Length: 298
Length: 337
Image (cartoon, rainbow over all chains, first blue to last red; front, side, top):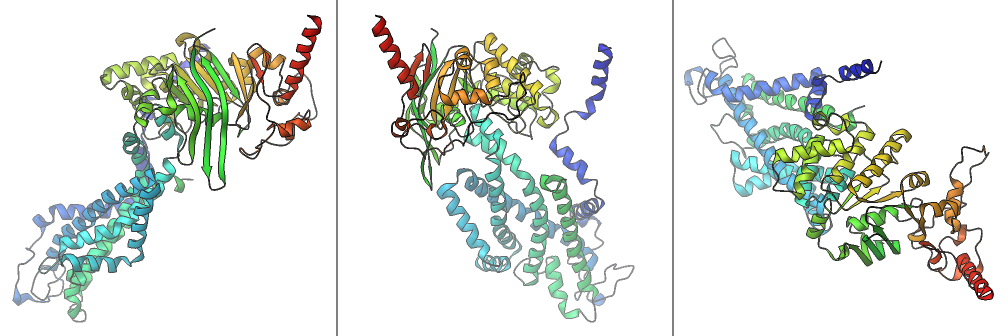
């Protein structure tokens, strides 16, 4: 009898069930949602496009053929041609690299700066918190696009400066998010327990508080990439971001305005490209939120 | 008498809030002797946890601050130690386990990672292999089976009792002299509670680690402790060896507490309870803090603060009734003599 009972216990805890980390668990619940998988699929598609795009594009970005101006979509030019006779399909493929680059790097920049400021403000509190939080408040008092335009007009219009501007306007969002998370995590008992075994402040911050505060940043970061892509396109549209002849989608939209009525494909395809990437990131972000945010779990 | 390991002299911990200064712990004296288990009992708000956090130097500051007294560990005053010095003492000389085993472990790391971290903090020169071996050894010591496998698990895969064992392992991993256990069994169910208490008693015997057990449960105290301190509204009201406190409680509050323990032998319709509730710390400035709830309260109790009277050897109580007794005894002895 006794040995039988022990055997059952051993079988009930098979080796594969052990050691399921929180990340793997997150992935398991993420893949349950079809919509999130579609979002992730779109994102992966555009990332692949950005990586291999230049090798598969039928034409170079600046190959002009003035004889073939404003041609409608056809077998030769899938998305038609623009007013310089450039292949829109090729330009969109190249444009993926620009948009994703701006999206990822501006968000990474603002996550790094915002997290650092947020952690310091949340953990140390007092006057440091007051100063950092008021700076965030002031930045958030401006409409973000206006602030971005102001930054770009100081730095000068270029893609790189647009990236910096977008990074700057996103800093307070991440800073506030991580600050509030740190405020709640630092009251957790395992933080007191960590102190009770003699752990240093810096160690507690980076090995206990940061990893436990990171999930909302991942979610917010994914959604922020979508916004950053739109903002980059908007700055490009206003002539403050990427400069001609770069195949930036917003810039392409702006250039094509004049031909909206007689050659609508010059505008439709860059527009669809922007919409699809943003949609992909948003769906993926929502899925990540559902999978990683404990509050969303029932 | 055994050597005094941890001595608390006139400790005062005050919280500075918008509503004024609140003395959560007000002038307490006690000592923990080598290898003993000392219990501190009291209701919520009596200052038990603040006492333990004061010893660890973990009073949240602001608003809290130790405003007076000394905490001597082997003659070294912990109140005067800098943060850096305290970090070296915490975990190595004094360790602490907490009430909630469910939340006292970081959910993102495995048990092994956290145990090894606790080891490496105080032994930075140890190799990972050596730390792992020590982790396995300590896991076995606290009675956890399949230690090697458990070290790979995450906290959520363990039951409450197992987690509390892990917490004890983490606390004992650097062989501290004193272990402070703040309500270690409150969150556990009764059977597990008994196991954990037994474990703490065993470890106390085997490792000779002094234990300061903080609890609101007199049953826990009866099972484990050698001496007991009863706290009320930030003060010590009674201190006595374990048999004394149950057979001959002197302070009306202690008497009330013991009466409040349900007795399974007799079926009573109503459980006894002490009327009223613990006063807010700092709300009573003169007189005995228990006077408002005390059935023996005299005029004098409202005007003077009673000191700790010696009721018997090693038995002290903060009540004027004892003074009377003392006087009577003295008179008697004079008459007899």
